[in-house]
Amino acid sequence: MSRYIGVDCGLDGAIASIQNNKVLDMFSMPTIKEGRKRSIDIETLSDFFSSPFKKDFATVIVEDPGGHAPSAAGLRSMTYSYAIIKALLVAFKIRHRSVRAITWQRQFFTKPKGIKGKFDTKLSALKVAQELWPQQDWRRTPRSKKPFDGFVDATLIAEYGRRLDG
Image (cartoon, rainbow, N blue to C red):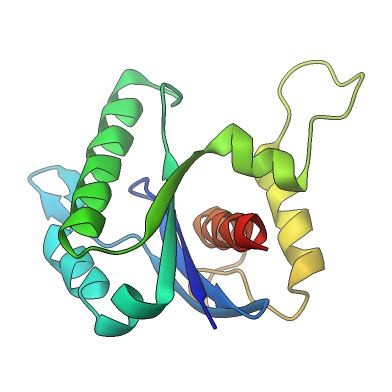
């Protein structure tokens, strides 16, 4: 019985795990302050990925930022986080694969024909996640008023991996 862990590697991303079509855990991406900026918290991620359970019974699917981000600084940050996560997965010998956002998103939704302009992938992902797991609370905290797209994306990335192994 395998656990699938999805990683949305942005600083506002998340890590989510599923097993048997049930959402088990969702964590905001751990970050630390470095001066005025935030950075990925390597120590916390190392502790997370060093768990024997994750090594032996999990497959991790990490979103590869590729060349896509809203800004050059955003791309640099996401690429840095991606590199750290990949290095930890290799160091701890955890089964993993990478997937581009457009690839996992196509598994769940596509831009409808005839739509001009920008297509809201976050809203589409939320709708799919709510259909797959109707009882799941997608908010970051109980006080949050709206769903956290990091949880939604990470969970769908994990589900993408589960379906690949199908």
